[in-house]
Image (cartoon, rainbow, N blue to C red; front, side):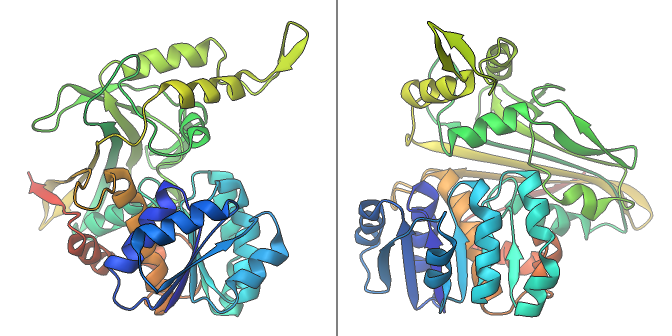
Length: 381
């Protein structure tokens, strides 16, 4: 199969690495970026004759369409606001498409393309990273093990192995995506109905063996399409982000001061959007690309054999010293690569634009994760 990777940043490189090293059915890979040097660097890093580097402006529909033609699937590792246009180009090119997502409104526009994608005989599957992403399939995987499922609680975090003040956090993906998670509303199921909760609220403590004190709080995007998928089937569903203790209070203070506002203010007669300045300061002052962990916890409550049961899935992944891949690259880019390959080999439940938890066989997906040494620690209680 022939796979296109759009974007040659951290996640683009992670996807290319998986396609080269963990994917025997992939015969040809194209990695494309606006900065051709970045695409070439990725191609040189993986060092294989399977890969071709290309320059692309993803805002040019015609150029994207031309590039997609002849590929079996495309993975978008570029900013989420391009994904609707990229999905439309994929339908015209009859090229399966998945992306790393991150915005509920964009995802809704993509899913509205279902009939066109079905007619083209392809899949459009948004939100295929870590969270939103992998956790949606894990939620479906665990839910199917109960006779009746009542609650699903998802907790996920990317953490530096060596936290540094002031935020004990490092940038592991787009700073714009991080701010979105912290300021937009979180969608949950409460009492059997979909509702919205303010981000950076409902703080809770949690623990993982071997880690210092941790906290989790509401953030947007992590539930993706799960509220619609489980509506009428479940009483409670939510998603919270995991950080080292103290992070939420510090960051929320900056939000409350207006530093994440997009409304411009005048500073010495120059109009400035606080959010743009804040994003630049975060990029300048927070570490990046240092050794990291990814923590995932999905807890289920329901009935099995007539008894009330609870099930916990934990994943602890860390920076891979052998490959140089961060835990965030592994747990974000690898799932997208797995899904792209499933769409390319027609291994989805049906064609069209649809959520991954409705398109992907959860057992097969979990097996692919295990083959990449991303393993679930399972406990019933």
